[in-house]
Image 1 (spheres, rainbow, N blue to C red):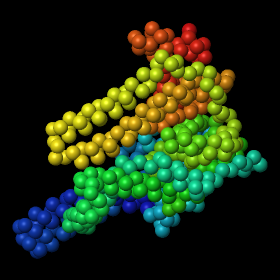
Image 2: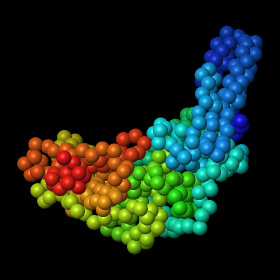
Image 3: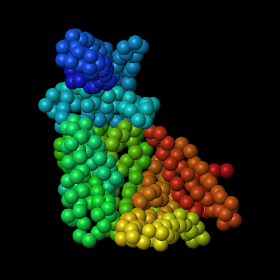
Image 4: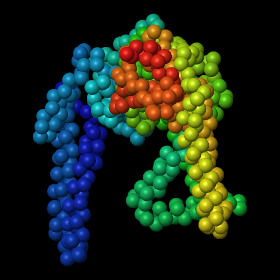
Length: 472
């Protein structure tokens, strides 16, 4: 039996950090009663608590052991309740290695393994190991890569830049910035955090260029958040390489933190080809896959083909996933259901315009700020309206005898999903009272995935759908 990397002790120590409240309270009360000498008299309690924390961390580390063999990996753990788990290799869908930048000086990597039977939030097996130990654990999985059949795809820097440019989320960057400021206040003092916020306010006022300062603050916060998200995406996908050898898909990449994934191709649930309005106008596509354990964490690589032109995209998609090919539409939404697609987005645009008019009438002194915020809200609303109209024009379903191709929109993206028939776990045809008159319905499909994954195609004819899915 082997143990995890010793750095795990520091991670365990972090978990019992709450025990430091004992020496902190003891020292505070001792100092109030007797000053420095009062604090010093009880210092032995502080030392005892620290030794207890270290002992718990070391004990937890020693109580977790693992043993890999040809059939799988055995993990034993537990402080009070003892657990003995065995994960068979033939049930593992995805194995991932993460080489965090902060752990490189300690020669530690994070190994994860996921199966269909585990939690959709946490990996079935995760452990910090040395690179050599991690390689020894997954050597059995790598054997499937030693074959003559080899197809590679290495996206260009331009492709990764396009993905970062078109998919970066301003909100995610703003969350990162706010977390950084709050943590800086905790680590370096409240004065440093206030100085950062004050500096941001002064810079915003200087660069307002006639825009109300509050509006300028929102605009620059969104822009800065988008820039942070852009850099984060680019760094994560830089040096990306995808290899397909027989039944295994290997994906690696990362500039500062390297990531590597080994996925059993037969366990891929579906392909998801995504387009936004801008990428559709430029004839660009991005490819994502659904597989247990892949793209599970927020900092994972989730896209397989970042952003490519149609011809290049089709070439690599066919080479990497020969069993998954989108087919032309056989069933499409009828013209009578167009309002079902664009009704909500039209209502949203009208509601924003009405709210802006009412607020300007009620608060005329804030006219410039209200107009700016209204414009910022109208942009995603109009984009949603266009996406829903494109969904109406291009959505639908087809079946080639083995796989279904589903075309629909979700959020601000247009999806083309290719899912094998044996990966579908539930088919639901849903009708409203208005749809009964037109003999149309909405198609809802649940596929094999971690958690509940729903695909929805709207406004399709009922009887042809029954025949396609062989429903009585």
